[in-house]
Amino acid sequence: MLNPTGMSVRRSDKWGEGRYGSSRGGHMHEGADYICEPGQPVRAPIEGEIIREAKPYPESGYSGLLIQGKHMAIKMFYLEPFRDMIGKHVAQGDIIGIAQDISKRYDKEMTPHIHLQIEHLDPEILTEMI
Image (cartoon, rainbow, N blue to C red; front, side, top):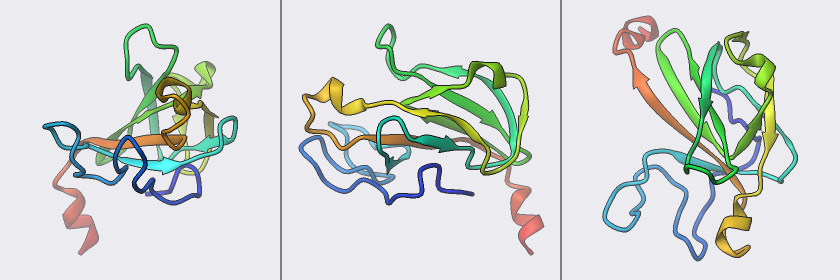
């Protein structure tokens, strides 16, 4: 899997940590938040088909994508996707959108990032690793 921004995972800020499993007010953070510069290109972490646009919050203006690969599905938030790519196959590393600025929603106190989470994982991926 490829890092979509080329930057590290968001560490602690006023709103918590961006690591997988971090506490989120009674529930677990289900992804990893990769630091970004708003406006930077965002790359496909896996090869697969861009299935649809994904919205992290209804009516918020923030968006993302769902990518279905051979053995996993990836959901990404806080990027403006290239909508003409929906329904198309992408290679790992292809530019799929532009990073949005999530800090605007949180009074500039949250580090801008791309949220990435694995939605589905096919256990057969393990047999290919042997």
